[in-house]
Length: 284
Picture 1 (cartoon, rainbow, N blue to C red):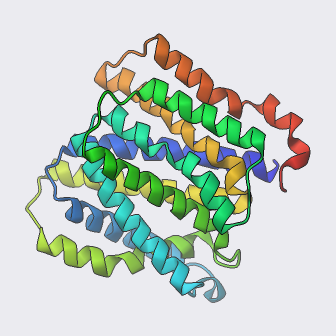
Picture 2 (spheres, rainbow, N blue to C red):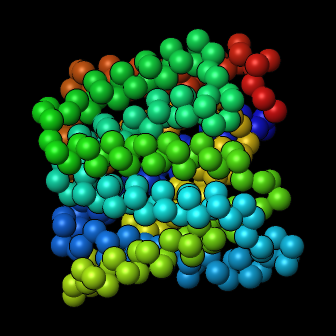
């Protein structure tokens, strides 16, 4: 399978996990302080990744590109905190509408940081996809928490774009392990400052959300290493389809005509026939 199509599949599966993580955070419903949630999530990531990291050859374990990894670790902290606030105080659909600005933000970021200017067709496809997001998830009114949702979108876009600068000699496991480990000192201090007792249900939801978002991060790193950000960023919008389905199944949110139109606008640029015609331009 060409690298482009593999990267698309990885991002779609990752967005399924991220959508389920959002549902878990919504179900927590603010019962856990934001910093406590973020610390538990990062700690679980380290505990899960450590044995996998140790199983690798010694040459694959060292921390590579320390400054960049440290930056990405704290992007995770900022984005996670903003995400919890946004999902807690906004409807799930409204929060996700802003989150899905990330692919659009990745276009200028990839041009500035990676020297990968998007073609007119990619820019148009991303604008159509983002327009579909707005149609489906239509935020009804401005809320202060929307600024936190925008913060999540920006940090997610920057996290994904900078994945392309990570040397290919560093494995995905090592990258995620070091990113999670470097985030612990700051997250631990903030969590201890606001620590509160939690119920078993809240703990389980937090652990589930942490595991799901860890899966997304790993899949995203693999995807953006296989193809340029401007080529595959639009696949991030696949999460919209999952969010819509979860709304039907769990929250009785039946899509209307505008929702169906929005899904069509988002999915159409991802159809295989479109990329086959552009196959010559896709990096291998």
